Each structure stands twice: as structure tokens, then as C-alpha cells.
Amino acid sequence: MNGRERLLKTFAGEKVDRVPVCPFVHFNSIYRHFSIPPSKQNWRTNLGWEGEKTIEYSEYFDFDHLHRLAAPYTHIYNEASSDDGKWDVEVDFKNDGKKDIELTTIKTPDRKLRQVKEYRQVSTYTYVEAITEYYIKEPEDLEQFIKYQPSYEAGTYSMIKEEFDNFQIVKKILGNRGVISGFAGGAFNMLNGYRNLELMMMDPVTDPGFYKEMIDYFTDRVFQLVDKLADHEVDIVETGGNLATGGVGEKFFTENVLTYEKAIAEKIHSRGMYDIYHNCGDADKIMHLYNQMGINAWGYLTPPPFGDVDLDKALDIMRNDMVLIGNIDQVEFLKNSSPEQIEERVKEVLEKAKKRGRFILSTSDWWTDDMPYENLKAFSKAGHKYGKY
Image 1: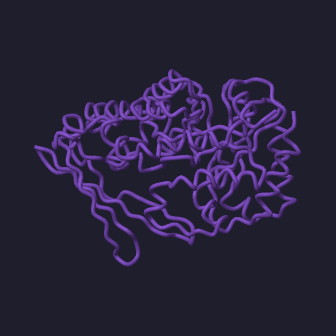
Image 2 (image 1 turned 60 degrees about the horizontal axis):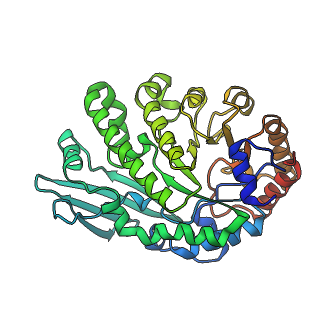
Image 3 (image 1 turned 180 degrees about the horizontal axis):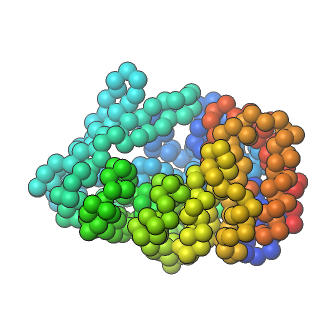
């Protein structure tokens, strides 16, 4: 059975030879493996070689190819000016000696909107980014998006179309060895690209009409992005669910998040793609609600201490037709354990998960630059050994 068949059949609930082994490979691992420290700009633009080199990297460790790095990542949300001049985007970069700062100003006929994003190099091969000032500070700011923001295709997509084309380039190189995954924000995550999270948590209480108007609008933006991913023949869309974690509570999630995430999953399926709902944190209080969302897969069943997901509980309560992904902690366990301890942990996870089926062995997210190679090899070897059905 080739890798593409193994993954697609796992999602379809069909018989496979073994559990796919698909840890969350991030850009820093590719840069480290090939000894090419990234610049900020390279990290943001996802040059084509990264997608190709990811194939080589996964082959080196004998990972199954659930390929997440073929094309755009975070900057699929960057703004672009409209042709009519009513949405004029100006971007300025500066460095304060410790970090790179990106200041984006959007000028409309009515007002100015401003976003500030910071980029820090936290290690030789890793950059992280964070928004420190958000566009939508008051309802009048949202009105500008509704009135003047160009469609995704006319705006952002037109600016980075050649990077979307890389999906098909990498998919052709990959062939039957695996599948291509693209990224799109979940509804709540997407909104957080424009509005401060603390305010988003308060909005449904202080101004529910405003909250609904915002999340309706940006859910539609996710729909537009999903359409472009489908146009480029992506197999799977990974949507962000890591902000509305168990910490928001069952009531908040049910009333203010669930309906929108369900709509996005339905949109993805309507375009012939599978979805993965990405919550790599706490989920114990709300994971049963995922059964109502119609999602194909949930990753990444993060165990303590960096999450609160109990594998036995998840295997018991999650829908049998949902793929479950993850459950190996990469922050401390995978990095600091011996190969023998890793083998034992993988064996334990797979002996439980195989009884249910529809499982993909993975880390609970990406790992730092100092991950020992012998530990990644032990993880992969154990996955192949104990994952056979």
C-alpha cells in the first residue's frame, strides 16, 4: 500500500495495512536539516524549495507524507490593495535591535486601520510572530472591511498566487507517496487575526450583535480561502481551533464557536477535501462537542502537561468515524526521553488506538531545533513496528 492510499483510506475509514506515522513537521526542521538558517522574509514567503525539501526530510526519517509545507502558511491573511483605490495597503518594516516589526496601514475613504506584527528569531532556525496591535478596535473598523476589503481572490490571492501554484508542483513531485495539506483559519482563529483575543472573549456578552457580524464576515473569508485551496487540488485543509480550547468553556464554545466551525467543515467537504481540526491544547471540557461539528479529523490530542487530553477518554467518546491524530508530547517527552522510552510510549498509544482504528500517530505539534535525531528515528521506527493492523 502506498502512502497516499494509506492516508486517504484512513480518512475514509477503509482498511489499511498500518497506522500512518505523521509527526507535525514545521519549517524550522527543514532549515535545520539542510543547515540553512532562514531570514524573516524567507520564513514568511515559503519558497518553493521548502516544499520539495520537506519530502526529502520525511523520507530520511521514514515518516508518512502528510505534507503541510507545500505553500502559503500565515501570510495567506496578509492584506493587498484593491484596484479601485478604496483599500490602500502600506507595509513598513523596521528593526528595534531585538525583533523585526511589520506595520501595516490600510487607508479607506473613511478612516485608517493599523496592524502591528512582531517577528522574533528564538533560535537559529526558528522565527515566531505575534500581532501586537489589531485592525478592529471598534465597530467602525469592521465597517471598513465590510465596505471596502477586496475579495480574497482579488486581494491577497492575487498577490501570492504563484505560491499557491506550488501546491500542485509539490503534489506532482510527491506522487503516490502522500497527500498535500493546506491551512485555513477556523472561524474563531480567523477573527483573531483582526481582533484582540481578550476583546473577542468579551464581545459576545458586551455586544453580541457586533460579535456575530464579525464572525459571520470572517467565516465567509475562510470560505473564500477554502475555494482557492480546492482550486489548487489540495487534499486536506487544516483549520485552526487552538484558540477556542477547553479554557473557553462548553457554553461559550457552543453558543459562539461551534456553528461557525461546523459551517467551515461543511464548506471544505463540499469542495471534495478532507479537514483536520487543529486544537493542540486543552480540550477535555469541549472535545465531546467536536462530535457535532462534522469534522473528519481532530489533531492533536495533546496529553499533559501541555494539554489535558486523556487518550482513553478520547477513544471512548469521540465519533468512530472521526480520525484522531497525535498524543505524543514533543515539548518534553520526545525531546528528553531515551529511544527505549519512546518505543514503549508509542507501543502503548498504538495498542489502544488500533482497537478503534482511524488513527494517525503524531506529535501534538512541532518541535524545537534541538530535537535529537535518534529520538525522531525511534518514534518513526516504533510507529512502523507497532502500527501494523
